[in-house]
Image (tube, rainbow, N blue to C red):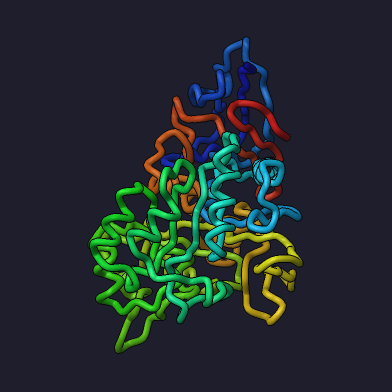
Length: 368
């Protein structure tokens, strides 16, 4: 496998920033950061002209890419196209998400995904069906169901590929939540009308994070602060946010960042154009909606989200990068992705100050 040296860039490791150094990649792993004049002779050098270098981005919620919406194109070939398309955009780890659907569609999507292998594929994120119809957003109310141990087992028995699930905490009894937690999923509170107390109770019981902050959840009101207030005031609750300027205003992102700090991370919620099945996504000016106008998904890459965080919200670049690398990796309890520490997987992107992607290195191999 090639030994690569990225020379002359600004290196964002996730913890520190290095200039006038070289990032060494060997056997698919980060080898070291050395002085640019100390690159070993057996490395192939790539001068990067002062561009930014960081870990490949991690997106825990997206539904498709290009012309492939996974719920409507449930095939290994579709997953392969999505994975390759995302890597080409700098997203080197992703959670393939399915919004609320029929149980047979969920099961078929799980069956197909069990046969898919790709180093960018983290697993499936089921956004539903155990949500609150009052905060359904684009999800069909008739397909949202009350969680029971039997329904959970019916959906997840023998599960190998579902790694994350969005649930409404106020709709799940404590013993049922404990049963769901036995499947070792990353649980996220969302599409929820929880009161402050209900939301706080869910986080106290071990729900670690929340789905697309502000969207499809009980809002912050001065007499009942809802799920947003529960997230803000809880010591450990984290939340994802969509930084496209359509799902959430940039001023709201700024407020959330001030409240949550390192507990706030970025997702795209990206979908693909689709004219069949339940989710018929129509591209508008910068976002997708259902034919009735309900906002249904984003149309940005995660790197574009980082760009918006810097240029529109005023978040420093190193912190915006962490929101799309370090923080989601921490949620996954993965120390080998989302950073440029020695020994980590060599998923690396290079982009200029205009956020144009220049290079993608995936598991140590130059992809573009």
